[in-house]
Image 1 (cartoon, rainbow, N blue to C red):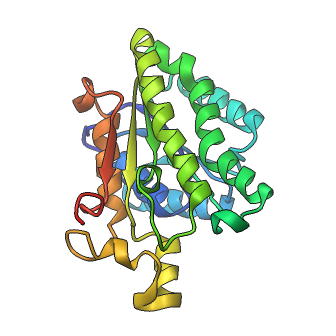
Image 2: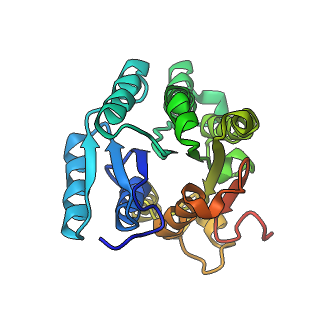
Length: 258
């Protein structure tokens, strides 16, 4: 493949099996990255590998990897370093929230959401940190508009708490990363055309809970996940070598327009 914006960089990418993870894997591979992906679902991860290879690229898949298990994370990262000798980018895409109104959410669902949206980012960053220090690399975390703005129609308190913490963690790691030479940034997508959102519209049509948010976007539609991937590409690339500690919102203007 022709040299691209990530040519030769070893990129750890979580959650490659579908949605934004699959789109990101395809884009990063096309831009020359050595993508080392993981997912909980081996079948969906294998489909991503097939799609990337059909486009002339390559992506390595480790599946199943349970990112709620620190031992699984440590093993995945150690195997990557053993094969490639370095890590240049950690891209924390994976998340698995549960939703319920605040007053009714069970303690188990709350803890599950924090474990699978916040803890997995913490542990992956910590496990990859010494390797990123060696390469003077970068971390890209995926936050959410829910981490900075409430939504009356969406019962997402646990999700909002977890993603708000990811955004705050990003800023603190960016501060600590100055001494280590590690850039740490966050992307916060709005309502994107991912399988869960599309399923919501299939079920509820124009009464989908996310409809009032989408109405405020630049085109009145759920966002293309590729828009988030391109923003991530910038933050992961050397083009952003003087950018750290930011939360880049990719939401079609929904959070800026009343």
